[in-house]
Length: 375
Image (cartoon, rainbow, N blue to C red; front, side):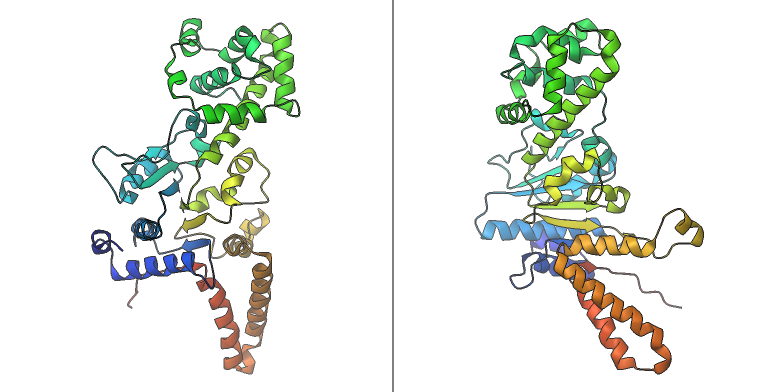
């Protein structure tokens, strides 16, 4: 590890960094997902910085061209604060990207330049990934307009597209957004234009709805369903844009605030957008949280559908990311739990052996440091 970064870490943080990194690159027992659950205030962000430094050095040693990191946290203010702490390069004139909306990628080149080996992109679920079913902001609709005017089926409907996508923006303002001199045209990425227009085809509901709008006279009475069509176009663009993030490492900070991002059983638009990130087994995923799941649930909370064990099980299954390992863990956990029902038999060696098997599983995917409490 770089001496400069190493000097900023305490011994227990260095131990965590080394352990997690070795788990990520292990040739004998590869681990692509890991949870650092250190107690509040013990510097999980600094641990993440140390892990970035480890990958940075490792990737340069093996001849990689870049290290691409996505940092996801609950809001943009935290993202802005922590992204500078995670940036181990901090070269003059080089800043890391904070993407307010995932569709900004259509006009934002986040590819590494020759000046920087590291790229960190900060995202937040509520603003970056949460694409509503409405019309979105005017910039997004302007991006859609300039892309759609290059679509083989809709390039002839420029005037109709202007009307459809304008919504409640003043005419003068909208004319600036859709003009040939709009700054968007200078930054619009040709590869995303091509991908989006390929995805918008006759087999897509969005295509059919848009074709109906363009072939009929625009009516303000149709505006509610019209907004839904724009919402679908925005989601389609988001699903294209997210593929261009191409991370090597994803850091989910305080992920318990947005567990829906990693829940494979969730059936929502956010999950559809992020699916390519969390189903790619070549991407390393680092979870940070002092409280990844509840330690226990009250009876009243259970009546409301909460269950601390199910939360724990969900996290373990996500981290293991392997059906066989998940089944093995359930069996080991069951054996250990069953052994605790027979404490009166005082078969301590047997119980200890069951306990150590559970610990072995958990230590392969979770690390936690706590303060020493002296009474």
